[in-house]
Length: 281
Image 1 (cartoon, rainbow, N blue to C red):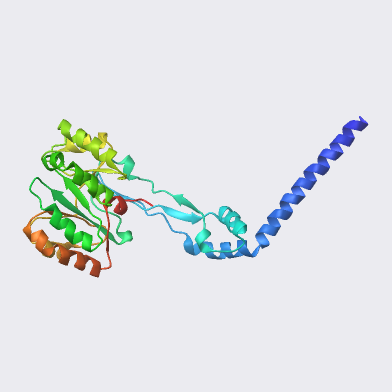
Image 2 (cartoon, rainbow, N blue to C red):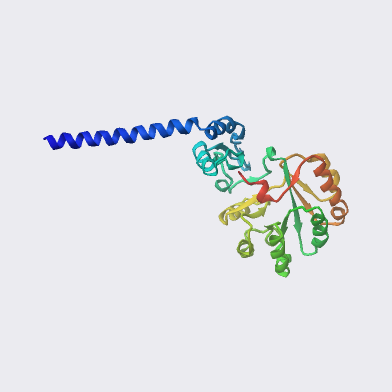
């Protein structure tokens, strides 16, 4: 019995020592200048989640919120021995509705809070894609090229170059027929080529096309502005943050594309790929 009480006393002493050490460490941490500065600065680096705008058959993506992870940030800065905002670690809060869970809806724009727009060029068999590339390359612009199956067949190397150069390639199948087996063939090749994270379809009037694109895990884009004639006037009259603007490649576009880019930039909007515009972080 005496041994029992001796062990009990020893166990109690160990527990108390552990508790006391933990408590002391916690107090010291809270009084550390680095921790104090983290708690002072963290609120200005937090951001609220922006929820997606969802209707019956359309969606505009939300933006994840973020909170400074106090303890992780402290541990990182303590190792460095200095407070530095660049060492903040974050916890992200996702929007309730995510694009990947709404593939049955048309994406009609990016979130306007990002001050970005995205340009789509519709590439058919006779499109003057080289002239478009010359213009946007001079401006260091990354864009989206939605390619028709007939052009795709004859220009595999160009598709690879587009993706390697940082552009996005979308899938028009053959004449925007997403029920044709060639759509899956094109989709498979585009996904295997390079670093493009998402595959894209282009809106048609046929709901079955949307369903087939969803089955292949493609996002289906319904542009905010669709331009055929008078491209500069159309952009000027309708431009807003979050716009997805699609262009047929024709002489009018080639003539006015540089002016369009200048105009968009003058409104303090960045021109980005769909991958960037639709990113939910």
